[in-house]
Length: 539
Ligand code: J2J
Image 1 (tube, helix red, strand yellow):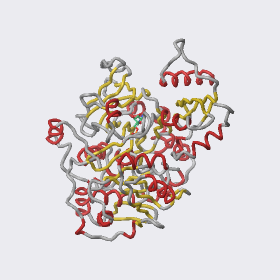
Image 2: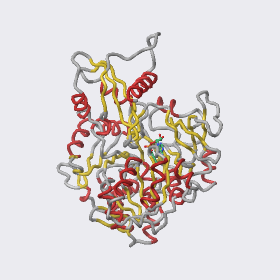
Image 3: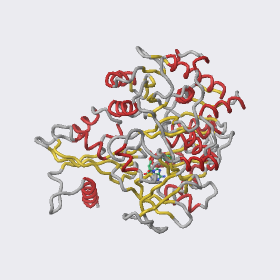
Image 4: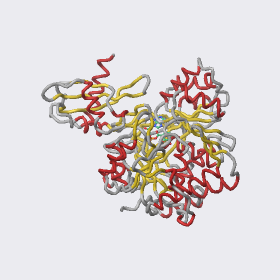
């Protein structure tokens, strides 16, 4: 088993400690501190449950003991695929307590994706909910277990069938190991997969706690805050910007919403007096529309975070008048760097920029195509390094060569403008992925699946601007033999074990891909041309 590590150069790590960014806390130590300070305060509200901080701590310890009793040892990896339920928290804090390393998968992901994460992480266990959104995760777990030899246990929240039920775990303090070291990797996040398959992002206690502790401060969270998780909890954004971890860190209350739809979310805002929540731009649009006619009382809402994809200024401007709260734009990434507009920024900054970094030690470079710093006000490639930006993906030497410079900067793939006031404005990106309502889809990964179809000779996948989603995916396909129907291609993609959001939204059949006189162009250039030609025909 390859150990999971994340290493900053020694002198850099020392500086981050000296400056107090990395303060020696771990997930377990901060939860225990909170539970000791105010045991009876409610930590998390889910469907029909409300657990106090003391109860969350006790449940986490029981979960930890349960996994250790199954024979797992500190350092082993556990794929966690849970929806927005209270158990999300008891499971992850339990895994942290046992020094097991969660790998966070989204509820939408399917066999091909989960198998890839489990194999890359050499996972020993997999945690699922029995059923959710009309999908039976135990079927998926059977298929994953059959194909991943390292996977020894499946733990189920709910009806476990032949697997291990989470609620069968029993406390056993004698099994609990010493706490992790703050520099240990606490968990792995999954990258948006800009080129090909997703990579695993190892985050340490030190770096991640710093990012959400500062986020909580910048976002004005206090112990009186009530933060609702409306986006899938496994995403980095609802987890840490400022996220449920940020809320728990300050002793606030977390409300798990089973869906981000206005119906569900508005009812929860009213019932729980929610003060803060986060959305991707298409959902923000939907909420703004629904708020006009809702009878729900949204007056408790103080701050709305919007991020994951570009929020248009016209939409941004409507947040305060319609929802009666302050908009805070968030431009972040699971690899690290997070930018916020500040709550007291002028209106112009809040609506038209994506804010500035969390830390004075976030180093941000904006470089032109030659690698020369671009002057403020002109677009360039965003590179970054800092106290909570990773230095490398787990066990991915080739990807690391591409994604990081020799001196440790992460190439974000985003094209940004830095204004003279330091705020960043996202312009687009250099890489070939589709940002579909905040879900990142790799063109390469989808093309690869399309090519597996008998009647597909070649395929190129591009992003097309979309009024609602921001971007939708469009697959250009050169048929082989009999031309298939679009519906058949989509149905085929659904059999490939992928999250539904990866099925192309639109399919265009073409006879051939135009090539240059020389006859060869790169995939990247091909996608760019197809996209441009397509947009031309739409005008
Ligand atoms: C434009 N593009 C944005 C924004 C992210 C907080 C918020 C979001 C994420 C996230 C996150 C954007 N405007 N406001 O992890 O902690 C695009 C960029 C970026 C990529 C990262 C967080 N906010 N993006 O979305 O890892 O292209 O993280 O590089 O999923 O989303 O995607 P992801």
